[in-house]
Image (cartoon, rainbow, N blue to C red; front, side, top):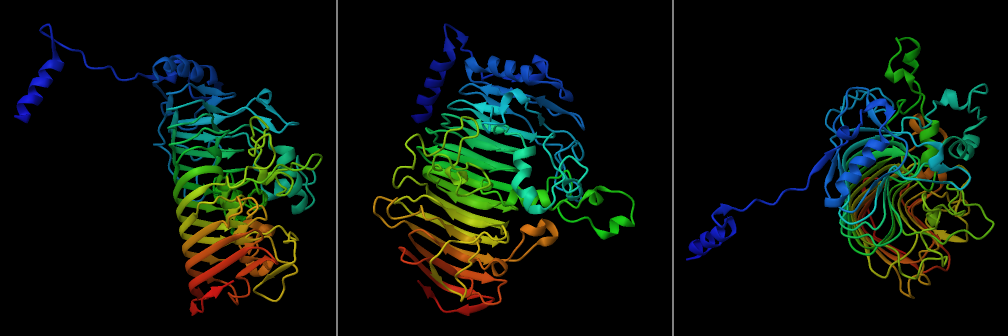
Length: 537
């Protein structure tokens, strides 16, 4: 009986006046080369990209970006705007990692694929204001970007020798001087590579980027039900940033990897003095990665406000912070807003396009509006902070299977006391931690409630890597940091914890502000490969 009804209904659909009804036509896909894009690495293809996007806009179609020849790329010098429902689609096929570095941002090591050469014109950014227009702007529901390699091939990547050469264009006399001045003086404030406004049901997937100021940035509010998947790269600020979302967002398989050149990470091998020139001998590239890693604005994933988020399979190597939750109030009038100063506005998250702070015109974020959700499978290798809590939420944040390696420290940067905690020396605790909780993560900023964070299967291991990161490297023992630095409030329940590579794991386990409302319970603990008693603070 059911089969008869289905066949009858099918006949009704397919026959009209004795002729077969036409099947609905799929949304068209417009090819950028049909509008004049050439991808030769020299011609400005921005007008062709925008024309293709405009053609796709009325029906919400896709814009196809074909692969380019070896050494080529589509040059974009200003913003390409995608109307709601338009998706930019390329392919990463053809790119293979070389044997030493992992995909240099210059023309070497590329063998095709949909490659974008991002060369923002000076007219698109304002160095004085510190803002810039985005490269690709997603303006609404149903937009997307897939399968692109976005390379800022004109971004400065000096070797150590170039950075400290007195006769060269940089000529910094010390690492500390270079750290303070290099980004401000030589990295133009180009806008995000991918900028999303009013992003509902947006999908960004299979994107690789090098040399960006920000890679994926969700500006303003109204975002929700959107997905960021398989995104990888290295740049001067955060890989994926979200100011505010009104509904659940998902983040999956994010990779922040420093080894993206054009020089190989690490000091120049001594053998290079005896062997013919090669890619590995162009190295001695420790200072710039260290400078970037010490910038608080640099993170794998930064969520300002998210009414529910799910993040999984995250990996960061050489970032300042693995995952940051929440934003701080804007700096007081007349103070610095330097992105290198955590208490001069960096943690307030200033929108790189509009210049507005994520907290809004009212100053501090509303109480209890920090993000809440779940992070699973988090690996942060070489960082200042593994997990950074800035603004609270009454709902719980959960971290499952987190391995954190705090191994960077800005020399002399210590936590203000008075403190209490493990270890004898609490007067000079370094600002370096597996889990770092800011004073703004407080009961007062959480509607009078104690914020709760739950962590399970967590490992903290610290070791210095001066061979790759020079003066920025320091273990927790070297900086007198802690696995947990609790300057704000909260209930922290840790189930299944291991701390390795410290002479005495208890010494550098925790520190908190004296008189604060932070509570820490560590159960099923393993310290330096031996079972230890549970810890209750």
